[in-house]
Amino acid sequence: MKKHIHIIFFFLFIGSFSQILSAKTISMEDYLKGYLEKSWKLKEDSLNLEKSKAGIEQAEAIDDYTLKSDGGYAYQKGGYQSSYELDHANVLSLGISIDKMFSDTGTIMSLSHDLNDTLSSVKVMGSTSQSDLSKSSLSLSLIQPILKNWMGIQSKLPKKIAAIDLKIKEITYLESIEGRMVEAATMYLDWLYLHRQKTILKDIIAKNTNLLKETTSRFNAGIAEVSDLESAKQNVMLFENTLREVDNAYQGLILNIKRYIEVNEEDIPDDKVFDAVVKVSAEHKSQRVLEILQLTKKQLGLSLETKENNLLPDLSLLLSYTLAGYDYQSGSNSASFGKSYSDLMKFGKHEIFLGFQFSLPLGNDKAKGELKALKIDFQKMENTLKDTEESLLLKEKTISDGINIYFKLIKGQEDYVASLEKKEADQKKQYKQGQLGLTEIIRTSIDLSNAKLTLTKYIVQHYKYYYQLLELQDQMMEQYQNLVPKN
Image (cartoon, rainbow, N blue to C red; front, side, top):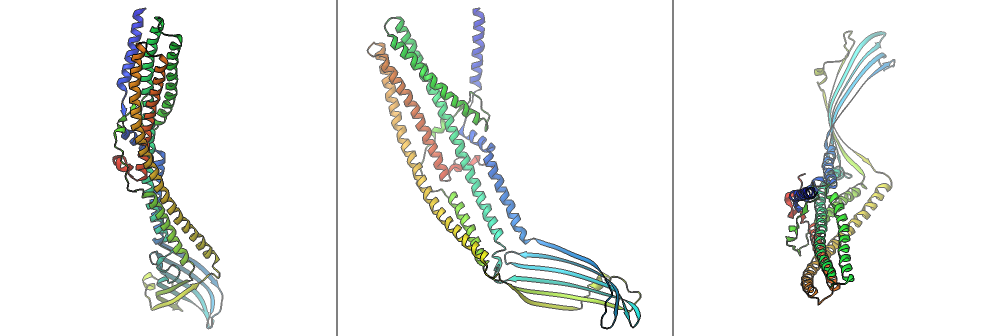
């Protein structure tokens, strides 16, 4: 029987030892890397950035060439002219044009080519004859706005807005990376906090278990009271229950951590992160949030300029140059339907046209209302920009003050823990010598455990403030530049 028990304990020991060997320390950098790679929010921001790049292409479409074509067939029957009677006519027409908007100047250019071929049967002085009339023209026309959309103030707005929007999305993506880094760092610090709590509580339980054994021996020897024995038991149970609560929170956090990295139950965080020197910069560097608002304000300013221009009349200069020609043949029974293209391209006349077009909505209330609303939005953005700048300065001061306060708290708590440790060691000597009751030792033990847990909380909060400050001052990515995803 004893042999079987020894075998069981042997395998239990081997299993525990193998778990210890398989345990590994997870660094902050490893966790941040895994978090950034698997963050759905960061992937969403990356897609928004790609969408803005596509928006640039959409906005530039205003400068694309447009090919147009039209054509038709018409049949005419009967009709009189001054010198002949029309029996019937077949008319073919074909037109093709290439249009382009030059958004930077607002100029609209059109190059068009039109063909028309009419094969008719006419009666002149009682006799019927065939006639073939072919016409062709090649025309280049320009429309140049000189009031509304002067120099493309309206037509180039979509390209400008899209370019600024892309810049905003690029900055937002960087902000998102830093935000995700701080989220990951905060979770990692929580992991460290709970792990340290477990370590401290296990150590306290071990010490109090030893104290319980010693008290039990003293009780059995008749030199300790029942109250001392029960107090020692209660103290162990108290910290065991506390450990169970902490372990429950620890297991919940591990499940969340497993979303981003592979981690085993035995793996532990690396407390070397607490070796980092916390530096509080006096220079205000939180620029990205303000830059986003300034770019948004710039977008509103461009839209405001466009709305003001929209109040002007639509006055444009028109210029066109046309090459035209025709081929007329009559009285020939051999007249064919259509001419060769080379014949049609023999232009016989040139035409230059210069004119203007003008339009103005009477009242123009819609444009006035849009302008008024946009001016209000612009003023609101200016107020938001000032308020955000003040809020960032206040937040930066609050976080910096928090870092300094927790630094002092840590120093004070470290001294307090050291003092309690000396006190506990001295009280245990007095207890063994019968000079002190167990109640005082237990009270000191509880105070020491709480002091160590509080010290851990102070350290973690100190570094949480530190990473918040790095994010606020746009310095988090500088600390972990090698982890920034390539987009």
